[in-house]
Image (cartoon, each protein chain N blue to C red):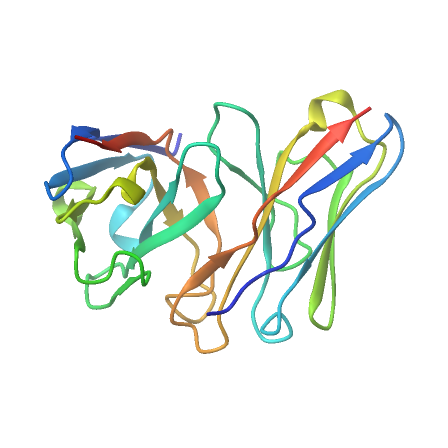
Length: 108
Length: 123
């Protein structure tokens, strides 16, 4: 079945830039979305339609897309950004949703 | 304020059944497709099922197909998940999520998420 590939972990120092990639064969056809999940909390939408940011999400979060890879960029990382980040999309035929395994971002 | 509140979780024996409910408020429920997403303890997110705004189309993940049934009652702004033949691997927090349409029932994004209800399948 279709899978989205994310790195399991990313470490970054405060104020630096973190980039999380998500790769999938259907990404040129299907939009990708990003969610942030902190311990004990429900996920929160960060990015929709590859690069759009919902109201209330800080500008330091941005998304981009290039072929089969989408990227979530966190610019000027803050301690509060330490969390799990998931990409989400759909298969080529639009019959099921899929999530990446999640990337744990650690702020050093 | 948009709110999704799940209920109905609990401890159930393998092979048993459970019905989850989700009460929606703060938005026109009948205009949105809805979904269930689950998360096993310490694991990632897994999509479970989708239902279109009019209940005309339903979709299921392979791991629950034939055992779970999604439904909704637009008059009550409520979403349901009937879970039968439960297995230990169904143990998870089950989230109710609103979906945004992008031209197909499957393909949009989820926002917001409820706080979830915990289902534990154990003897």
